Amino acid sequence: MPDPIIPELAPRCQVVQELAKALRALKEPVDVTAVLDAIEAKLDSSTIPEAGLAPGEQAATIDLSKVDFNALEKKFTKSPTKKICRDMLAKLKTELLVLNWRKKRTSRAAVRVEIEKMLDAGLPEAYTVDLFEQKSGALFQHILEKYPERDGSVYEGGVA
Image 1 (cartoon, rainbow, N blue to C red):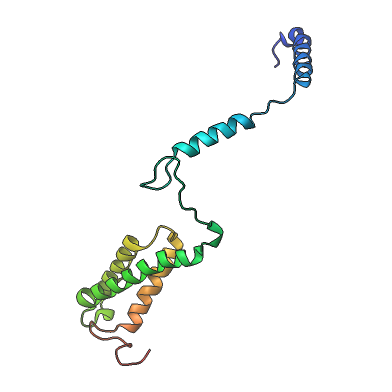
Image 2 (cartoon, rainbow, N blue to C red):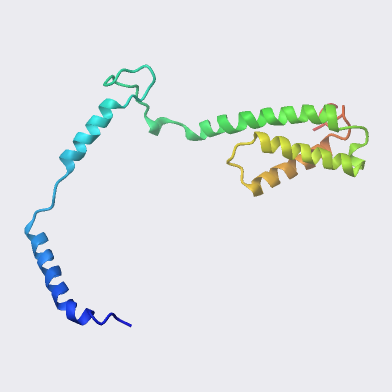
């Protein structure tokens, strides 16, 4: 239900709105670019982008269009991942891949848990839950198929 005072005040409000619109039309828009330029210049002169540079000293510039982000991504995601896998395999071989480990449910579960723990601790945050589960499952399946015993693998006999 509308407020009963609206019909009484509406004509006055309309007059005030029209006057404000007419006044705004008389004024030219305000140009603040000079102020923004002054602020930007002050910030540029007071910010030190690299350690060891004095204020106002020119820093080295990097052309971001020439950076190979795919190579950077590979460098920072694959190298730690390979190290994690090597460390994990060494730990599995010395601690968990015991005699007949594939036949014992508890041994298989321990291997799976260790794989998940090591991947969780070492993989980048970019891995989603689904991708993590997919990768850890595939790695467990690979270990299950290719490493039947502690000191044996299909790779040691020259067979891949």
